[in-house]
Image (cartoon, rainbow, N blue to C red):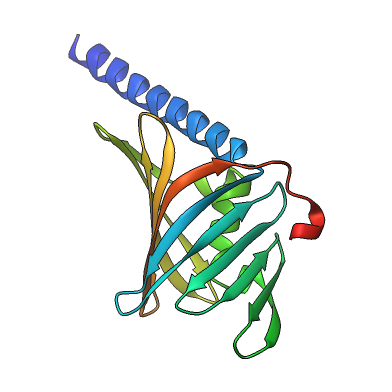
Length: 178
């Protein structure tokens, strides 16, 4: 009897985690053509801005303290610093922005994640590697209603947190916008 109860418990826990994962993936997919305000901190400086999520690209506009725009796609990114009037292009797979693209556009980020459902939040933990450096990620979703609230990344003597609020569903964002 005890073996049966333990087996039922483990199976139901796995099914619950799979159900939560499907719910989160569906929510992330629904973020196409949406935006959210954010506050980002690395423990020393605070930046504010807005993120726009398209089906294949993400545009991040930092508004304070400096005006900076970052546009990322699966393999390429563009960084524009308006004060310095400079533009740089980079490989997103060798940058921390890779985690954002994977969270918002695909399920491969969630394949090996641990999912913990709390009373009001869903906490997802995962790790990834860039150039032999390990990073740990925590993603916090509000549970009811389901909304992305925070992403934390730590590793290689770097850390940052980005909190999201004022989520908006936009009109279709054109490719030219990105």
